[in-house]
Length: 253
Image (cartoon, rainbow, N blue to C red; front, side, top):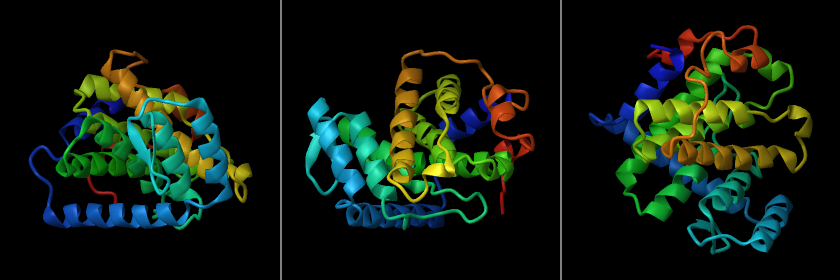
């Protein structure tokens, strides 16, 4: 089994036998925290500019942009809400991996769940799948890629959003592996933009691109089978210290 397939199997099966109650409560806290920081960031100039562009483009009324009550396409809602979530930089963070897991993940899940009218229990399992993927990939990449100038939330956020959306869509392991691969080939974002509107935009783009990856994979869009493997281009481009063992490691500490 390739490393991407192994992670994909974990994602597709996540929560199928039930999740511990403490994990469910932790997910709920993450959602409440995300809502708070997102609403607080609604008036940020970056959000207003992005919203204006999105409204000019139009889009099917599938999902809601928070605070404004505007409905647009799932992808555009994920983009704006993901940017809004990271606008103030108070969203939850992982101190070791140095990423903000929920900022890109939750917008992708909410947009998809709203459009498809999915129940909250599905959101919980999808969040766990996406969060775990984000952190596992962060441990696998190590610190080198961040120190070279990559923005962790931009890189890891796409993978987490793709994993969560794949779980929410109930994709099989093969489709989920394709979603992860499509997220990997879109991964990016440099730290040079810190202190500007570019930083929260990374979070919004990660939400949008991860959701797109899952939607494409559902309909059979293909990429190489093991995009996250040890010898992959993804590993070679981002980090010479890539440790793929961490992708499948059960306990990350």
